[in-house]
Image (cartoon, rainbow, N blue to C red):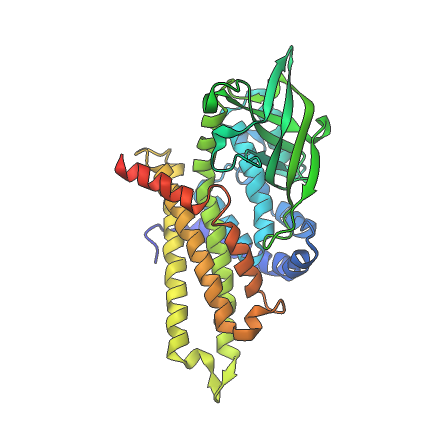
Length: 381
């Protein structure tokens, strides 16, 4: 049992979502992964269940669900297909700056369309030479009357080419380091170009690409928040999105664990199911324990965010949740492959996909090394 207990409604939601994911998402996951194809059927199944609306506020067509409920959603979708879960995560990430810092006009223009699944969003922070060191970005935004003119290249952008809007961070004052960064909401039809798509080890059904901005004109009203507040907006956003990356990692781990359990029960060696061998039982026990511990930490971080971070500990606990859960996902999926032996190493079985997908959770939205820096700074004061 975790320290954090779900409500009856949240448990019922989990059961309904798991049935949908098992029926409509899981059966398609391998083919989408193999073909590196965006999982449109799976995404549309999520839209039919109104999942994109969960993270959007009630006044703008959304359900206004708490972050714990959103974590349950991401966990259950990732348990079936991690790539599909990213489509829900990234649109929320792209819209969090609008939700928390955007004008009323921006909220009314974009949030209802995200909530309905009509459009999707991307988050453009990283650059070829500015990953963890955000302040070294070189993308520029120059004021020109009632517009800003944006130039620069953003890399590792999830949903590149699929998204309709791109939340772009660029420097309005190149001499001011992180205090010179501003945030803009850019529509793809304004001149956003995708220069290439990456061929990745995991999350192969979720496109990741390079976004190029060449003299893209963005109306002043599409600036999110005040000029020069972009760095704060970016960090505020990541603090509140990292726990759901932890939820994705928990879902990946749970999916691998569930398959490994079903496999060892039916696999026969030496005249009996291999589930009866104590060495394998101990592996499963450790896998289940780590997964449940990660889930508890993720839910706790989400509950802190829902409470408004009253103790100012969300940055630390959110980093812990993301870091620990993603490390657990990597170890559990690796053990799942081991439990299946040679079969686990083939694409005929899903555990190798879970292992490939797990790796990115240790890297994106801040590497686990950066998460440990955040945690250390907080505990050292």
